[in-house]
Length: 237
Image (tube, rainbow, N blue to C red; front, side, top):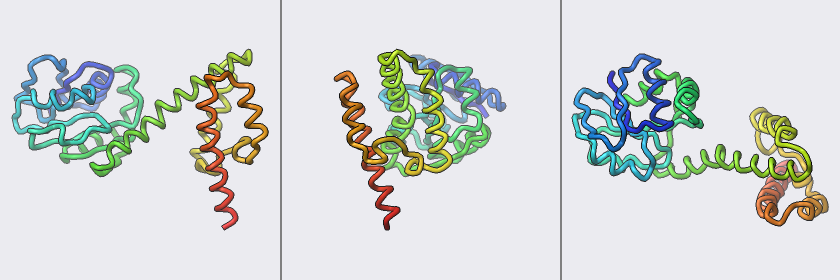
């Protein structure tokens, strides 16, 4: 099978290397080149979300599948092509080599033409599916899971430095908390003052924080208080 990849950034290079490794014939083209692939079975658009629609229009149709790798963009953006779909890996792809390794066995959201499921299976992916009207919510969830977690660790790093320590001192704690989420679920994994309703300790934390750090702490402490209250209510029920 011949797969033409449009886009030579991190996603495009990751898919190119991974797909070649599992035996596909892969061509990589930059998005600003002529997009005419008469021998391609699949044209995979690895371009920014905002560029998908315009790029799809520029792909010369040859009865091949035109697909994108976005988690949030509807398949409607691939008009006017008749055979369309998407492959969205639930994984961070920081570079071509690292991303290619991570694509093997990844959890991947697949929709559209059946040939895309075949490609996902070739990558040994765990396939999930979402309804078209849920794509934006699905992608928002992915952003929280990855991007917001990184932002939170950025705050941990700043607070640690303010206390004369480093992010490395707190990473084992964060890693263990995430492992607990995996093993027992978020509700059971929650610990700390908010889980106990210890408002005095929370107030003390806020007094110790720099003013610019308080909004994030308050938002997450309120969410933790609500989670703790739901857990307690479930126990009483």
